[in-house]
Image 1: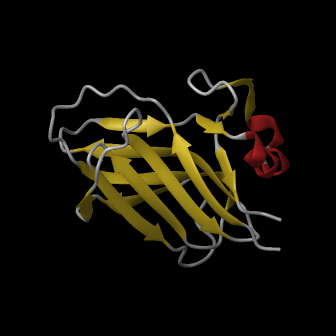
Image 2: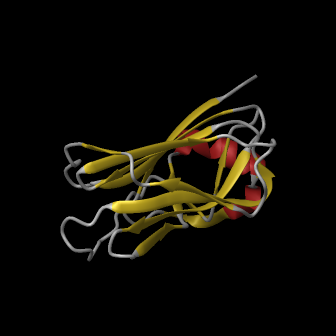
Length: 158
């Protein structure tokens, strides 16, 4: 069975970048195993802009422990989400899981922000627990107490 995974990574980050700083690059790093074999789409909402890119493994699968970058030049203006103007949505469809160690964003001020802790809703933890059972921190997220805190993500799988 194939799973369609669409995950929105919500995290509160307090940014000190100057007003008007835009994204120049964003991307993800695969973990040391389960690099995934299907296209992955990242959609980044960053204040009042949205960025999106799709990466396809060629050759398949993605290379483990590798950073895959997306150019920030294609952007579209959006209305910032009140209370949470910074987030990433990931779409991945495959029976073979992909593990993501982190997601990073670099802005036009040359500041880099790295998402390396992930708040996962209870309905999605089975995917992660089956793929990477020892990656939970054993605690809940500070800002969303109903979500489990993980050190990496696992998407896809049976």
